[in-house]
Each structure stands twice: as C-alpha cells, then as structure tokens.
Length: 149
Image (cartoon, rainbow, N blue to C red; front, side, top):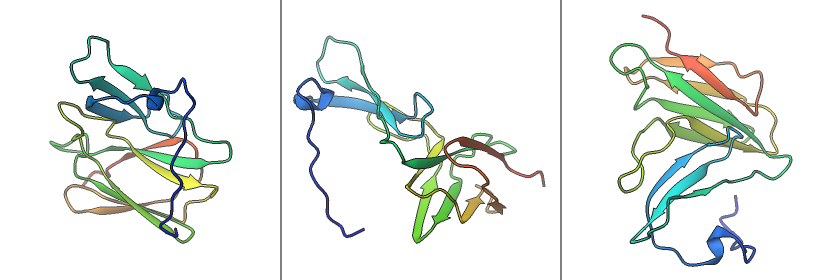
C-alpha cells in the first residue's frame, strides 16, 4: 500500500483500552474464521490467561493452509507457501516458534481483503520440492499433503 496507517481506537470496555504487561502470547485462529486470535498471559497477574477473538469485517476474504509433509517432519516445519492474488504477493513459513514460552497455530492464514480469487499458490516443502496448487475456493482451510516420492 501507501505505507500509511491510522491508529486504532478501542471501545472503553475493550481489552486494549487498558495498559497490560503481557508475557507469552500465542497466535491462532481459535474459531476457524480466517483471522488470528490470541491468548496471552500477563506478567505478575493472578488472573488466568486472556483470550482475545479477532473478527474480520464483512466482505474481507482469506485462505488458510494446513500442510502435512511426509517422512520425519509430518508437521511440515520449514515449508514455505507463496500466494499471489491480483497485484499482491504473500509468503508464509510453517513454524512453531512464537512469543516467550509460547507457540501458536502452525496453520498459515493469508488475508485476501476484498479479493475473491487466488491466482497462484506454491508450496516449497522442507525437502526442497515444490508443488503448485490450484485454489478453487476461498474463506476456508485447505489441507495440502506432500506428494509421495
């Protein structure tokens, strides 16, 4: 885009309306709706972890990818997915790392905005092989398995 942003404003009863000292945030699409939610603990807090659900505005689209590899790396850690939609290019890598003493969802989520088509989706598996996937539907998770050798 143009590199500009508008600072967000939050309702008075929002989680973000008060200052918090968080430790250990895990990002995941907890409700499988295509946006990343998070669970966070707070430093020196006696309260349980906080769960913050994100909600996409109407008309925003997405595509989620759940990769399964063969061999000794069935979670496909290190796989890289490239998605091209319109003029945009997005790249995501499967990882289990996250915040302090935390990890998040290993599934990959791509935001498509108002776009309704994916022009190209390529998976580079951890062993270096590549696979091109035809995407026929969006707003869902696709499970992609590495082809057998």
